Length: 301
Image 1 (cartoon, helix red, strand yellow):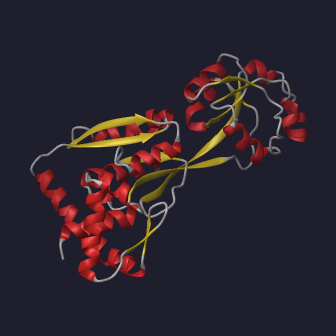
Image 2: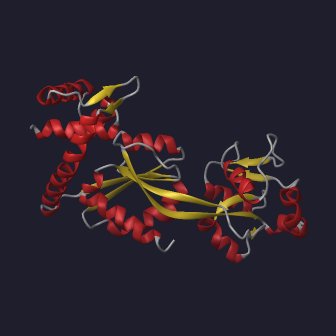
């Protein structure tokens, strides 16, 4: 059986789409369709059900993928090993939210630069667009809080991020902490808000976990909206209002007293980060090393 046809078949099986597989393989969509039809003729059985949006495997297709994919991945590992032995440099393309990339991911991966790696980072604020870029082959590895579905991606939990409700000391001094403990968010009425989006995603999540869900007309007015958590932190430090921030980002400012945590719930709100790659791509040695390096570093975050 032609290995090229099998490679294309596994790519389609994982991608769930001829078009998406074509982008990953560097082929045209008609070429991928032709190769799958050729393989189906050889086997005498259909391998995919054609749907309005992509394809789903038949039982025969699932069985073939289960048998063939591990061997193709092993061949890829052998090929990559030979490339590395020849001293070939490999570029790692990573993507994710700018704050997490800058403060967590890039410092961890910088240790690999010069060990057969070059590194390219693409800050992305839209999780869906980031995963689309991974699917299309624009990125090799993505960090995201969105848990992807489907066989195209392999997602590994990386770390949990604790969220903290913070404000500058001026605003914290105006909050009746006893009332805050007893009545919840009502004690915060009148304090302006700094957020990353008009929909108040971090505040809404925090309110649901610690207080009560925000009503349709939220009690807080977003005085500053800026799509970068580092900018949110600076605005809070400058006295613009309160905000919900990840602890890793604001711990230094808390320790120095430049901002104050308004609550310390027994069970703080958490958000899980995932390390996402295309299924099968960890057969690439440089990508596997980066993946392992981030998991090792995250154990200390």
